[in-house]
Length: 292
Image (cartoon, rainbow, N blue to C red; front, side, top):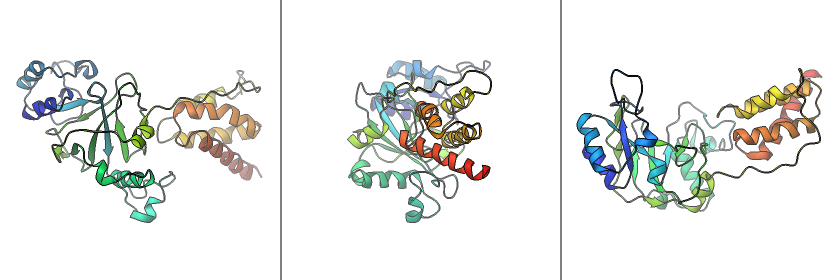
């Protein structure tokens, strides 16, 4: 309970999480349903005392959206050369085969004219996997994206989507270890460049294409749908496959761009319109070589 009360003292909206886990607490052990964390998160000290009296070993969930937080999650690498094929691949030349999220954040500070020493003067929590959570105040009324700035290494929890996200607070424990506060500083405001990086970007309005998407069997509707719903970490591969398929089916490169670029933007492809067009053109070149 002391850790839960400490989180409350910082103004965080919290809720109980299963002891030793990252999932919201089960309200009844005999039922397979859990607390609705986005609705339950609170700053009501009486409710918090009731929860942790009932389950003293519960972990602490901190809901970012009602707390007005941006939590930057710097993770440890899961494999060598994890940034290969991304815009941050060059960092392996600088740091070697293993680059962590903290390294990426330092590089971002340098790129955007900030000081990492200044950035880290905020409340910080070391995670069970030896990663780092940096807490910042998020500007009121501004919506954040749910996309990871650098998938697998640099993630964020903020107010994106209907619920936002949550993190485990200091004092929580999982099978990997404990979450430990590195300091007791106040939560600092988000840097302007960090806000710009994380905020939800308006989707560009594109003129309607004169090329109408075929709806009959053998058309491209399935390819467009596959790109639109491609999952994070696999979006570029799906777009490349769709472009090669359209090339093989006889569509021109410009037709593929007209159809697939909007779908790539809808799914949140890193790099935006320019990256999507480059991937499509690469797909056409690869398919042309194969056919030739």
